[in-house]
Length: 432
Image 1 (cartoon, rainbow, N blue to C red):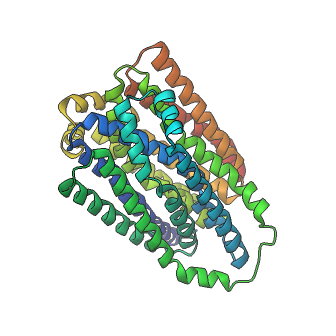
Image 2: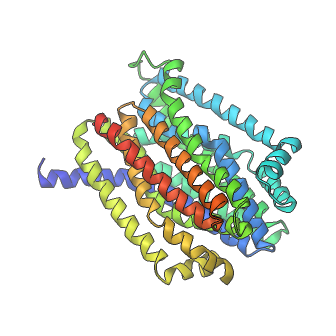
Image 3: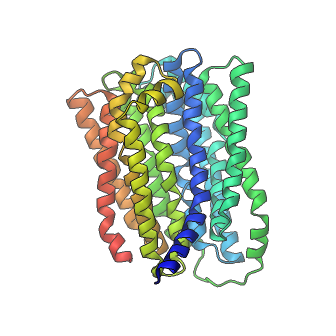
């Protein structure tokens, strides 16, 4: 392949990736923005802690539906596959909404928040309020992820970015209105803003995908084997992967409540996660990009690999430049609005987490190659290994060594992600 041709194809990958990366990047603004709003309202520690717990619960409930965009990108080919995958998505959306409702029942929420997580009564009460406001969140995520998969498959990635712009505007607008003109606790402001934003985005994506659906419905069936059983067998490892991966947040929250300096750890982790997510976000969409281009032939692999290396190098240099320099104070004190005490507390965990976005981009690339080959089981096994190692490391560091919670969580997340990357190396090579 000639150099000019390679450059042209690299540009093709870049322009398909850029709107999706911008989408995740815009979503990554939500965390720091809402954490900064909550930090500037009364009782910052309690409300930041409750926000972190409620957001972790919402992520866990929505986890079975998150990977539906990857399934849609790979499987949607004609009218029959569209209807079957849409019905499958709707079933999952109903199921996760019922689960969210069950968690709001007083006996269940009390047993989970105060019994299992051992949260103080005030934090548990605020968490329940936030979870009620986040009730529409899981299904709205499912709707927009399904239709985004169709847009990505049809190379309409800019529309994905446009819908996220509207989500961000709705989220910021809701938060600022409640911040300036209402007297709600910080966690309520944050949860209401999140729900408003994602609901608006889901409606926008559905409207934007209308023409693509019409085109799909006019295509004759080309994949007779793709029935509900095939979809379930293909998708359940992906759903299990996201469920196991997002279970990390409640696991970590559970251990933070039992660690040394628990309230401080619960308060700073949402801020740290938000900053790290900004840099992780540019690679999260790379799984769908990899699936889309590998579907055209394996000759795209060298270019996809080169692009992944460029992404990893750029992200690693940028976040390490912040974490190991005075720029960390600029972010923690000025942007996030933490007190001097909490900012000092957050510096070491931030340094430990600085390399995680690099590993996350590699993981997205590995998963994309495997999904494009319709080999999904190793993805689940790798995530299971990551969670088990994280759990064991947290247990040792918190229960045996009495380490500060936020530091123990950061070390555990780093070691867990490294183990997942290493585990996928062999099936990754086999898929190629």
